[in-house]
Amino acid sequence: LIENLGESIDAVLMPVIQRSTIARGNKQFIKLGDKECDFNPKFRLYLHTKLSNPHYPPEIQAETTLVNFTVTMMGLEDQLLNL
Image 1 (cartoon, rainbow, N blue to C red):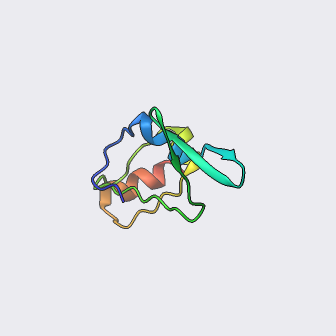
Image 2: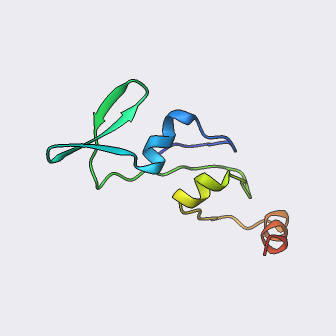
């Protein structure tokens, strides 16, 4: 769980978001910075933001599922205008 995320996501998280794994034998690894860490296929990453209608780049939106738990007048207006 990463809380209070802004509209920019640190590049070091991209391999985790994209699930860019490296297979060695029957194990999977993921590269974080200059280290390779064991990867569990059951791993889930939750990104939390307090922004009412965050605008993330298309590559992030394609790899994630956005769930909006808040409805404000401005956020609803933005969502309806984007349809």
